[in-house]
Length: 177
Image 1 (cartoon, rainbow, N blue to C red):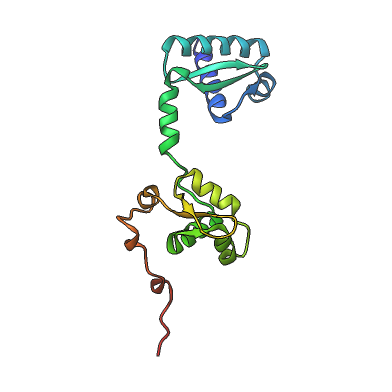
Image 2: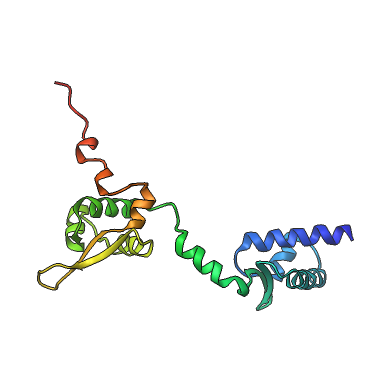
């Protein structure tokens, strides 16, 4: 039975690391266990996870297996996903965010003029992360959206308000006279 416990632990590790359905053949390649043994151990794991009724389950999906969140806790997953954003922003997103923070309210064309490249993807990312928002429309042909920063932007960078942004002078090295 000790061997079963260790083999189940290995299967759990593989399921956890995979993040997507893992096929029996892949598990067999890694563990060198017979498919019938893997199937038996997986069935036991599925039953154990169901019985424990915790936040995770193991499910069988199209000749494979996957570790998933328990649907009973979907509300918590949703809440977490809404507040937990990736702490990393790409360079284009950071560049776009800096332009918006210092020049707001600003339209996409002005951002792109300053960056010299299309900024659709960066703007979309920043909107999804709720670091910027549409503040209105500019009174100009096509009435383009005006973008500005949000409270989440302030929280993300630990600022009380926009006056705490470093001034542009802080970025320019003073020349020795």
